Length: 345
Image 1: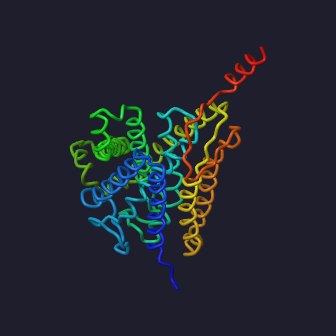
Image 2: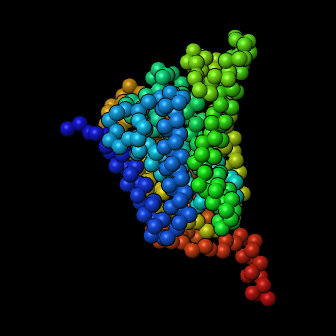
Image 3: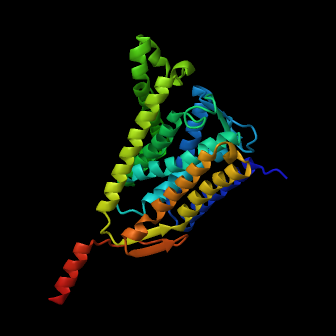
């Protein structure tokens, strides 16, 4: 009996979304409920726009639940990935302005082991040949994953800092998917301009066609070897800088002694990694592309490291699944030493 990977993927995503949503309801956390729904709306919006306006890829018709040719499971998948990544970064006691970098990196780690397998399972199809760029996945899609998660996470975390009772805050909450998509649109086009500029200077000379790139990409330009090279260079620089920022902030905050381990977010992200890794093996894709299996294992190890790194940096641990964790007072070693000294006196 042949496995229906479409159905398994849809069930995995729907169950994951319902678990996060159910926990928010159980905790009576209206903010989380709204943010999840906003993430779902954002995910559907960007998929529908890409399919019908930018035509960068299209989905298989084997998905059961669809809206405007976009699988509902993919919209839910964006919500699950974004929010699970945010739950992970919340386990690190760092500034909210840095957490979106963690969230984007977490999503990229998943995409590096997922997208090249998904297109070979015929989940979706790009215009690019399967032997180009990231094994058939355009480099700008990898940048897109970074931008999608970073932008939405940053906007949501910024809104959290505002007074929830103010009318402007409520407006920002309601329009957060549209605001996020607007910034995503600008970010992706800035990336395209940066990677095309060297090719433009060397070969074309005429800059008038760049205004059309936003809506109609010229395949002969966007997949030209020189443009592909600059995509890869800019992407590598971006990822290296993300890792630098993350490492610096984590090491700087290692004196903080409390760690909340969220089993739910860990389980969901782990299940997604394992689904595509197992699919890679079952379908024998790894036999023709063994590097994809190596990459899937490596990305899975990074995923584990992101979740368990605080275990080696922090002393006090709180593991939870559905139980609501009340806010704790976080004290550095210096603060604790001061309290001990004052008590001794």
